[in-house]
Each structure stands twice: as structure tokens, then as C-alpha cells.
Amino acid sequence: MKLVLRRDVTGIGKRGDMVDVADGHARNHLVPSGLAIVASSGVAHQAASMRRSRDVKDAKDREAAESVAQKLVPMIINIPARAGREGRLFGSVTQGDVVDAVEQQSGIVLDRHRFLAFEPIKTLGNHEVRVRLHPEVQFSLTIEIVSG
Image 1 (tube, rainbow, N blue to C red):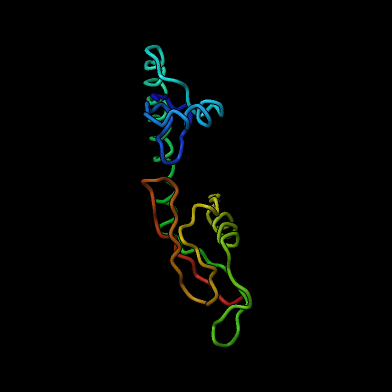
Image 2: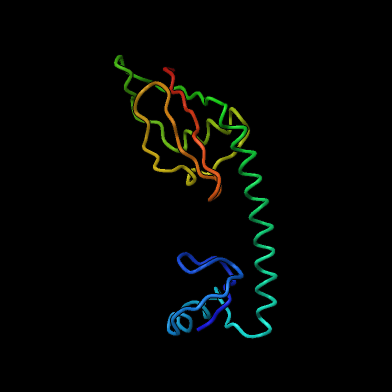
């Protein structure tokens, strides 16, 4: 069945795309939940309009992500933590701690869900944290854990 997606649907397509899906999936899930509408001749124009607005929004989001990345890449974010003699922390530095430190030191608010494969930091020193703000914008954030 041919449908026009009204929202981004993982594994199927993005808003405004005309897709061909199984009839049952369309009847039972996509159309009743408002994720898609059945494609007809009049809907094709609406789909093109949806794609144009999606492309404009995507370009703005990418530009905003690039500007944030340009500000954060040269910075070294310092996080004080209590540590033992060998440099192992009492506890660990979590995603929330990194988000708070970035906001305090740069004024930029990051979402903790944007970190890629984040493991809690348990030692003093410099650490690299991968951040994805947009599907096309990824960068490394340098974190320095200092004894405090």
C-alpha cells in the first residue's frame, strides 16, 4: 500500500516520503496512529510541501549543531572529583556530570542522550567523549577530570 508519512518513522522513512508498505502494517499501525496517510493524487502535492519544510528544518538544525561543535571542540571541560592515591575516583563521572560541567563552563546545554557509547569515567586525567548533535555532525569533547 502506498502511503505518505506524516512523521519520521524509524526503518520506513522520513516526514513527507512516499513509501510502499505491507497492507496490514498500514491498516493496523501507521494510518490509525496518525503516522501516515494513504497516498492519492492530491496528497502528492502535500508530500512535496512536507519534504521542503523538512529539508529547511534539517538545514537549520545542522547549522546550529555545527556552530555548537565549533565552540566545544577547542574547549577542555574541567570536572573536579574526589580521587584516591592511584588516581581512581571515589564513584564515577556520569553523563549528567558532563552535561552540567559543559553548561557551567560554556553556557551550552547538551542532551545527555547525545553522547555515543558513554562509559562512566572512573580515573583522573583527560578523556574523549563522542557527541552526535545531528546525523551529520559528530565531534569529540575533551573532558579533564581533576582532583578536587
